[in-house]
Image 1 (cartoon, helix red, strand yellow):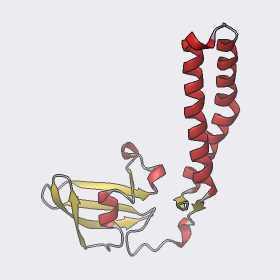
Image 2: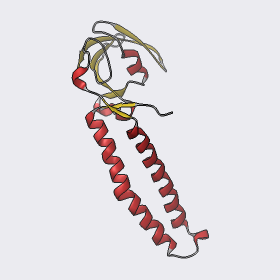
Image 3: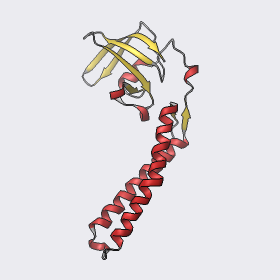
Image 4: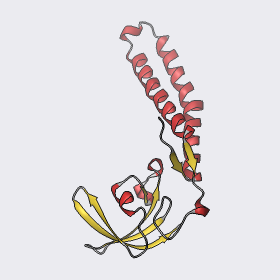
Length: 157
């Protein structure tokens, strides 16, 4: 049973580009490395051949995983999102009530999460804790160090 993954247009395009690059550039490159290593003689003691075959296995596993994700990918129509509560693709400004720190995050699918860009997964503890909350509400979020209270200051797209 496959899991449906939701993506922004940008996230879906990145995944498709990565898959295309793996199939059209990486796969032929590894095949060439295997052929060159095979031409060097005895395969039983050929470390280059073993390394190339292992790299090929890892590449094929990544291609297979991306194929499965893309097969079950769904594009999110951002124009239909409800801005009255926190949902996937919501940009949320929150305040840590114990430290007073204010942060802004965009909630995205797990495959698009990038903390440096302020994109957190809806499956992360903070993402799960914020989902469904409205402006002005407080979210009690359980993290490894305990419970943190975040006040939702603003929800935008």
